[in-house]
Amino acid sequence: MPLITAPVVDPPDPGTPGGGGTPIPLPGVGNATAFYTDPTGTVWPLSESAAGWFTLAAGVSGIGAAAYTLTSDAQPRGGARLRHAQPQPRTIIWPLYVYGDTHLQYLERWRQLATAFTRTLRRGRDGRRTPGTLTIVRPDGSSRSVRVFYSAGFEGQGKAGSGIISDAVALALWCEDPYWTDSEPVTVHRETGVLVDFLDPYPSVSSSQVLGDTVVDNPGDAVVWPTWTITGPASLITFTNTTTGEAFALDPAAVGHGPLAAGERVTVRTDPAQVRFQDGSPDGVNWSATLNWPEAVLWGLEPGLNEVSFQLDGSGPGSAVDLLFHPRHETA
Image (cartoon, rainbow, N blue to C red):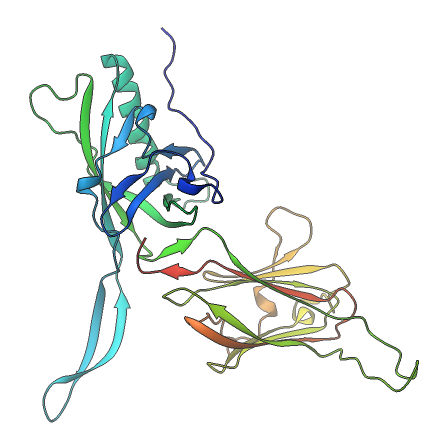
């Protein structure tokens, strides 16, 4: 008997209206297509009935704005004042109808889907669990994603006649980060200009200190935690969010390396905090000790405009800073 396998498809092309697949009406979203990417990178279409399953759109919920826990302080004249709003994890309910031409075809699809979602709860070799990704694609090709862990729901209806050649599930997908992220990143690139001779052709000054002051726009609804890539030469790197006053500095000499040479790179992730010197190995070298702890604040970008300063001491031709982030949104 031939083995029946689930269809494996490429992620929808963001530039293709509809993103590939059959649009379905989602509450608060309108017509859209959807797909799920499991921890192995396998893509499972959720809005294409030819796959052997499809979304029961009427039961989809949990894709609106995040829930918040509010902390307040009582006021002496009555009432209270909001002190802090903490976004809470969300749970998305996503119903699927699974079917087959025969019982064995249906059973194979059922088992493969169950594995694709529950795999998010298995620990990898590094001891960590890897979430899957639920992505919703709009008719104009734009898309937003959220990372999900299977929580419950792959049980079937449990009524007479179900589970023979078809059945339905109501997946409960738990999201540790409740915000949806744009699939397309925002990038900012700043590079040192060509340095000039002070006396040729006339007295001139070219900076070896400040790479650039700029304004970075975060078009999302929530704070984003960017990734920075610094390319040498540079002896001391300082990043300041002048809007919030937060800053951090990176000194290669702190790990005995000395100034970054031309072409050498360091990547700084702000959430989770991680600093890696790119030495050619797959993961790079841990350079967390190069940060100016305890003063260092690996700051995020607030929604809207953020005034940012990139300063590279000892910069020269080829010195550059690249900033990358995915805007985060309340809804799909």
